[in-house]
Image (tube, rainbow, N blue to C red):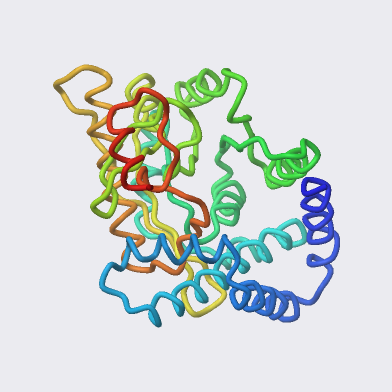
Length: 310
C-alpha cells in the first residue's frame, strides 16, 4: 500500500506540477513544505537532528528554523525537477551558474575523464541538465533502485529525457560501465555523501564517523580521471549556483584501500565545508552517522554503537 501511494503521489507531481504556472508551482511547494514541517514527522525530526551535527551550537529555535528552511529547499528541488521536462534550453541555461567550471573543461580538453562528486544539496538534476544542454557533454550517473519498480522507471525516464545516461546502483555492472565512459573522456556525476552499499569508506564528518561511497575515489584511481568535489546551493533568486573545487589528488603512497580512504576523506571535508556554509540546502532526511545506524554484524565498533544507542 505504501509503495502504491508513493507512486501515485510522484505520478501526480509529474502530471500536475509541470502544468502549473511557475509562481503557482513554487508557492505550492512552500505550502507543502510548511505543512510537512509543522507536523514534525520522522523525516523532519531526522533532518533537524542532522542539522544539529552541522551547527552544534544552534539553539532549539535555530534548529527548528533551519529545518523549516531545509524543507522549503527540499520541496523547491522537487518542484523544479517536476517542471524540468517543460523547461526549454534557454530556461535551463539561465537558471544555473557554476564557478570554476574551467577546471572541468580544461581536463576534458586533455582527453581525461571527469568524476564530479557532490552531496545532496541544491538541485543536482538541474545541474546535470545544464551540463548536457549548455556544453553538450555526455553525462553518466547512477540511480538508487526505488520501490516500487515503476517509480524507479519514472526517475530513469525523467533523467534520460534530460540527456543523461542512468546506470542502476545495484546489479554489479555499474562500476564497469562508469569506468568505460571515463576512459573515453566522459563525465560521471555521483551524489556521494551517503553510502548505499556494504563497502563504504569510514570517514570523519562534522566530527563523527560515517561511511561514504568508495566509488568516486576508485574510479579516479582505476581510470586516471580527475575527481572534483562540487558544491551546489540556492541563492535568493531563481538561479541555482555551484562551484567546482580543485581535484582530489591520488596519493602516491599506500595500498589502494589506503589511497581510497584518504581521497574519500578529502571529499567528506569538502562536502562539510560547503554544507556548513548553507546547511538548509542540504537535503539529508535519512540517518547518516554511524551512531544513528544499525551496526553491521561483526564490524569493529559495533558493540560501542550498540551501547550508545541503548
